Length: 336
Image (cartoon, rainbow, N blue to C red; front, side):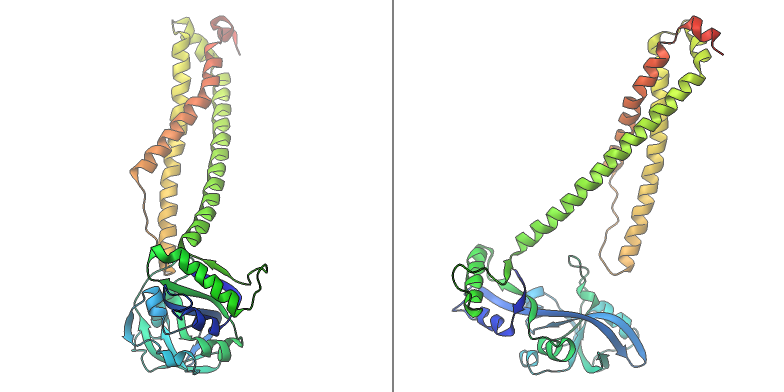
């Protein structure tokens, strides 16, 4: 469950964590985010960081690889400690133990107290690329703000999700002194809503790409038809000769349809090979950037691609083939 707002305060999270307000919340953490030049000795790196609470490990099911995470007291006492995501350990301390070492974020020194196990990408971000510091430290020393960007709460069971959402809304309205009839200055979303929003975005992209593919097939089909019409005009004498020695219309139609299908199949197979190579290259690049991306090409997709090209060649080859079959043998043999 996520709460996205610019008016959310640390005291709001304390109110939400109280059982009398939201009985079904088992834990909650706030987040503030930023990007800064992070120094290790004489080396400088541009990296993202997050201010979080000690409860992050429980909320995100992250695991410590070395050292420890923040303790509750460090959330609010401006402690200058940091925990590194997996990739940040590789960037900052590739050949040494980072525990106890000092990094500098916006000219503020932080002691590394722990590192996290590798998790991979999550949605559009990767916890492995993050530097974590206590939330008050990030607010006061790094960002100069007094609010929290968003929060995540963990609910005891899926059956209590709807009730927990209503309790959260009620509690925040009371904390923000929002009167009845006034609009909320916050939003509450559960995981299902977030997935639904993401699904809507991917559906829009899917339909957009499908329309581009349909237009491409139409243009390609028209191109095939034009090529076959040119071939008919250039081979009129051949058509007339075949008819003169006994070829029937069905033979002429079959010949040109087979040629049309052959041209489209060759183009389709070449396109499939190029698509596989591009997909493989994209997977390598994305994995190099630290995200989990599986290279997967199914035989069903290749069969579908070949089938589509077959039918494009068949459909757009019919008109040129019928035109060729209607050529008169006498006129064709006199054609120059």
